[in-house]
Amino acid sequence: MKKETVIVLDFGGQYNQLIARRVRECNVYCEVHPYNISLEKIKQLQPKGIIFTGGPNSVYAEDAAICGKEIFELGIPILGICYGSQIMAHLLGGKVASAPVSEYGKTEVEVETDSAMFQGISEKTICWMSHTDYIEKAPETFRVTAHTTVCPVAGMECPEKGLYAVQFHPEVMHTVEGMAMLRNFVMNICKCSADWKMGSFVETTIQAIKEKVGDGKVLCALSGGVDSSVAAVLLAKAVGKQLTCVFVDHGLLRKNEGDEVEAVFGPEGSYELNFIRVNAQERFYQRLAGITEPEQKRKIIGEEFIRVFEEEAKKIGAVDFLVQGTIYPDVIESGLGKSATIKSHHNVGGLPDYVDFKEIIEPLRMLFKDEVRKAGLELGIPEHLVYRQPFPGPGLGIRIIGEVTEEKVHIVQDADYIYREEIAKAGLDKGLGQYFAALTNMRSVGVMGDERTYDYAVALRAVCTSDFMTADCAEIPWEVLSKAANRIVNEVRGVNRVLYDCTSKPPGTIEFE
Ligand code: XMP
Image (cartoon, rainbow, N blue to C red; front, side, top):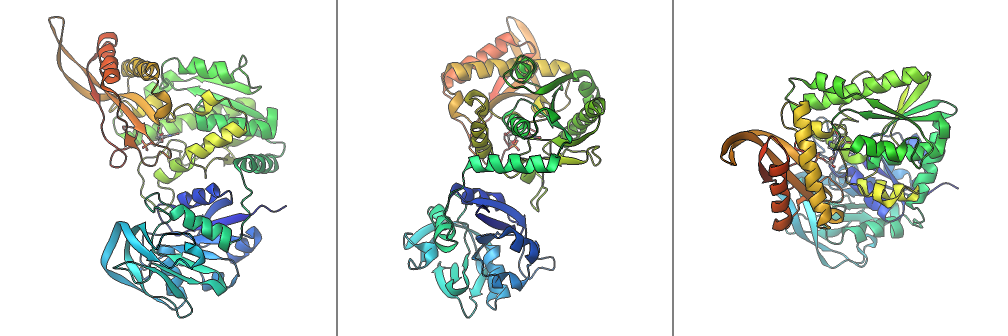
């Protein structure tokens, strides 16, 4: 049976995958495609609905992303969001213009509650706006279904053709009733039956991997973190012993982590995996010597990883596929969409130009962290592994500001170990998205005993987040912070100062580099 699908057409906005994720939250399978996908391909996919995303441009810009008009004749319901709504108006004879005042942020919108889009929605509802252009006039056959004091057409529809549009972003949390609006579109307008679950994602992904890999050999980059563990178990279910998991100890792991990963996935562990541990500390330290620029460090670590995998693959022989546990925020923040590059996440933007594998398989590429966790539970991975806090591929390399040396690695490992221990003792670990120690490149004067010291400052960080795209700085109780700080200064040589990072994301990022 063909599964019900809604597709999101990516016009270059920031929230494309978030829209897809919201649709999946309605229990309808959803994936993102480029805005210029062919009509043929759309027909093959047989979606029950299409959503146009926002985008950074004006419809009048020279390089504006514009699709063909024929899409409106397919008889498939379409929802245009922000730029997507303007495209719809522009192509169907309405008028898009530069708004007299740009609307940005939470805005009160008045909606027509007899519209199928706004059934059950309050007449005045707070929505997230972010636009400079707006629809000045809806196309002839459209009815205006929402407006604000600035925006005459904040919503419009042509139900006979299944066309709906909103100027605001229903997918972001700040749009208070946004989820209900999306559910209206998916359920009432697209008539989806909402029978998709994460279990179906696991099943169909296993099937798709089987078909792709055939009887080929696969190598999986396993770090022991949530994403790569889920990817490895998924692959193991799909292709069994054709899979070899390679765990590279790059010398940038947390204290004792190498042995812990080996205990779970190695020969004594609970999975029957072909498991290889490569102790590559020395070569990573050598390549990182003297390098201080964050992006360069990331690229070096990413490249060295791949070189190790290539070498291991050669030893196994005839390996065609490399599997990585890349998830969606890695992709978007590496700037592979049209959005700006924040950092090159090592398993995406950090890849070298040439990779000696026939294909890279990234089965989790469209999922957010919490969705990956759900998939992990579906696969029977124990909760304590599924709910481990994330740890970045480049490891402590990006938690040591400036040059990485073995000595600094030991300092940050020991400080981080103490901090994590104190957080766990206080029972705070489950409520935090991520918490760790980082080594600032700053040395300062202190006094210990009667001696002057000139040592490093360690920064402690803890954030609350579910999607890791945004994060709030966590309010760790003072007793816990001061206990951890005290222990770090007393027990870790080379540290005489401990700082707490109070920055949220944005404007900070979670990691320091
Ligand atoms: P930032 O620092 O960008 O981190 O706010 C967001 C989330 O991504 C993790 N992260 C990475 N994960 N490879 C990864 O696998 C990377 O290169 C990488 N950089 C950051 C980070 O730990 C946080 O959970």
